[in-house]
Length: 99
Image 1 (cartoon, rainbow, N blue to C red):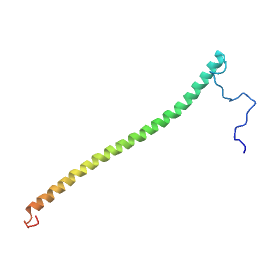
Image 2 (image 1 turned 60 degrees about the vertical axis):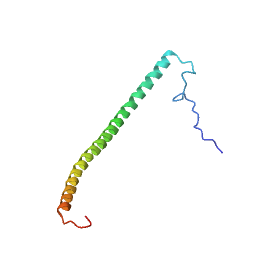
Image 3 (image 1 turned 90 degrees about the horizontal axis):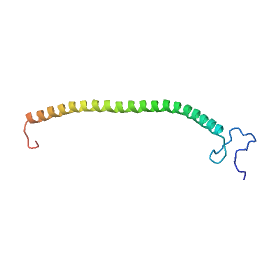
Image 4 (image 1 turned 120 degrees about the horizontal axis):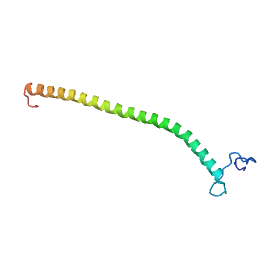
């Protein structure tokens, strides 16, 4: 079976290097750090936008649950009033052996 390895390139463009293992000059290390910083800045702007959207979605969900809870509690008061009316109606009704 043929091994699936990417073909090796003769050009030094985009080859992976390990700065700790290779002897790089101070200028080369500075350039690497600058390139990494620029890549990090690009990624963080995308992540920030995604994080804001996620935070807003979670906040909307929480507010929805909070609002629904208040709505449900207000409905329970109405049910309590109906139960009290039913209780009063039972007390006023005729007394039988089943009551």
